[in-house]
Image (cartoon, rainbow, N blue to C red; front, side, top):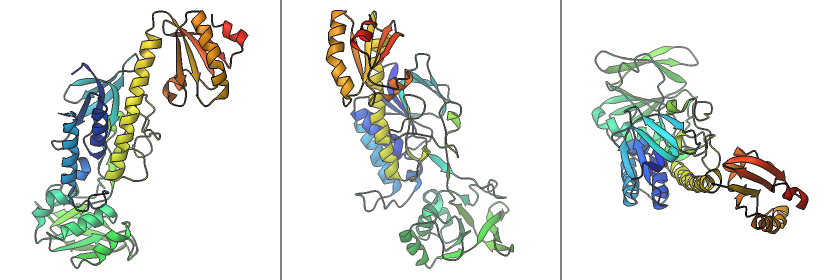
Length: 402
């Protein structure tokens, strides 16, 4: 494989592997860096995945396994590693992806698909009893609580759906819900399944104040938000489903982040750093589901390929050109640009000046880098540096380029 990869995808969840399929199928040399021993991200820890179009019944691990096989069929290379930082080299094109293990991968583009992890509420006893009765993954730990009584914290889709799944194993579930009676954050179908399940009871208007136990969890203290009363519930385990936080610590100071630490991206999944893209749950977005992560990955991959082609063309034909080059920033739908084109081509032929055209709609990175605000704009470069610029040039102004 070349010393410089076409793309490094950070994260092997639904977004990362979807990007991997599109990148590799587009003949881009592709490496997926995954910190965990298993690929699949959050989806691989979800037992029932019923809302992925076209697949009626399948587990999260099944679907993520199919994603990986698809990647491997097109030649995606998977590597184990935890990314510690991303740096753009001095030429502004090549990126360095550094891992905590000390490895440095160089790539023309990077797609960040590191996803999110369960939110830690910081309840007294939460950290102390993690893996000792406190769990964040029903698929991982359900069988440890067979025929036992548990508490579930949360009322969103994940909390309700995983509670229904847990009833196949446990004796009973008490869901601690901070809303008024009958109000859950989950969608209607999930709510109906939970309300109809005899093993699930609800503790309304309440929050967990403390998780209690000795060596293992044996109960929780619950506060009623309306009365302030503290009560105790005996249980053998606590499952926490209260949202997620993005895995973006390594991006601080490099890529612009939104409130909460999620990545700010545009409609092409591009970040504020040219050639660095985001995909999946790590993005600042409305809906975080497997299907939206897969869509993000596909968009990011196609955008990365287009960016790479544009940059390579720009580097080769303009920045690394031995002689002078004329560059016309234009749009094929702009009448002034269309009218200028034959005149400019004749001028460049006469002066033996190579001509490069840049569509400002398709190549927004390049036109933005050179602050092209009006079209058509013609710029003369010499040894990669701008030496003369004319905007909407007349025939006389065009001669000034010489």
